[in-house]
Image (cartoon, rainbow, N blue to C red; front, top):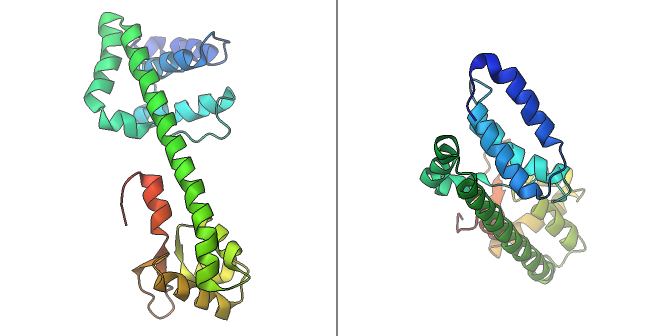
Length: 212
């Protein structure tokens, strides 16, 4: 709950103790932690970003996710009014039930979206294994595929330098992938500046919409 400046150190200490407390339901605990952090507003700027960063860090610390990667901001941004109303209702009406319901729905929706994207990424990789091999007819086909999955937007010079593929072969591979629409040029090279390429199918899955 909101507190005066003189009470903030003690309130943040209590908040930190709650972070490390064992709770019957870790997701409900996280909902409380997020709301309390936003209410305490301990910093002059960046409290919203930090409050959202706490979500993946806490889930990771508790072992609920394998890596601290869980982007919940998109859900909150798409429902900004409901998000702020939920936080306000906690302070105004002590409506913890309503806030926790909203927060848990956000976590579930994001988890389902992440699962859809993960499955889409795996399916794309399996599809592309055969296609890249057919297009390039190179022993570097799978190595190239792995590299562009890790670097979906990249400079052609970086590929030649970092992928461990001979320069002439690297140029031929990129040209073949562009010719068959697997890669797309978003900024042509100019002199010493390399061409900027994008792997649109992967980025469209990551964004959840057709960006390219």
